[in-house]
Length: 226
Image (cartoon, rainbow, N blue to C red; front, side, top):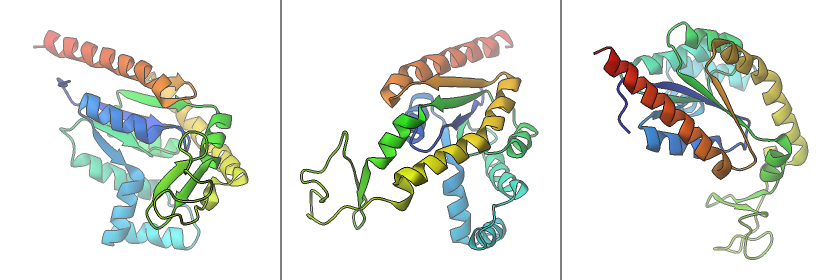
């Protein structure tokens, strides 16, 4: 689908909500540039940029990276894409970051994936890894042929420390506490769209239909102004 003007979207959802899969489908279906704040942060730290070094210092001292530092990093990258339609993932995480984004760009839509925490907990705590290769298994829908062992090498599988039940519960609660005000902020702006369900394939048709309508309306407005 060809867009008639630049389209700007944000995707939000707790860890394990299927955000990565939905983002991949959105970028392919609507020709959006996917911008992950996590990828950008890691790239700046690796390149030892000024902001990267500042963030690395905060992280190494167990401190949260200040909102203004994160905002400067993301907005600097977005300025290089002024004529590109994008999908922003992982930012904003706080109201201060949302306000910083809103002061520079008008966001067309915020896609919120509302997946029950119980579903996410089952999904994440069922995940096991073969560390040397990075192969991922899930005991519910993609189990190894032999329980606890990698299909290819036969080596033991391990569970990430942040995939244990207690850790997952804390991560989900922290996400809820941190992002609820951000969702309310975007709701007050009239751009929040929440999609509820337990499976990505269940959510995707509704997300696709909604954005298709937005793009159609956008094209009509552009043509009407010509």
